Image 1: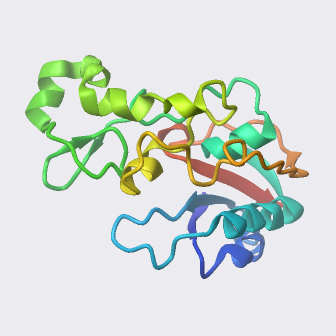
Image 2 (image 1 turned 90 degrees about the vertical axis):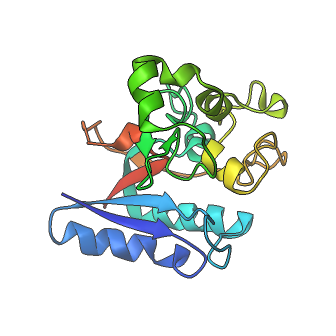
Length: 196
């Protein structure tokens, strides 16, 4: 069992407390970062993003993360970048096929998915999601979250939370727990923690 929360401007300082609540029922906490697909009213600033993860790190143990900028800062072995455009396929209620749940535009339909099959990842939309911006070549976060960049209209820019692009040095003191096989961890930019 997992409790899922969205870290945003109004609750970034409450994720550790929520992890403790989840632990009372034997659950992990899955934290997704707010994406401004409708409004940017809840969007975290760079400082709020990293303050939220520092607080979370101090109070929890890391089970898994596919949040690219966090994985980059932690230097996680084997992190190949976000799954969007590579191994996830989203179908919107209107039948559009998307490389990421937050992808703002796509001309692909269910008919395209049926026609392309597993090779849907070779379409322009999926290739755009899986390619890191040129400015991110060699960056540990592998270009960060493509969906976040696309929603912001800055697909060719570094992830706004990437400290490497800002020449910032972020240090997080995480405690890891043994890897668990968790459903859907690889299908979104997410972080799963357990309370200490």
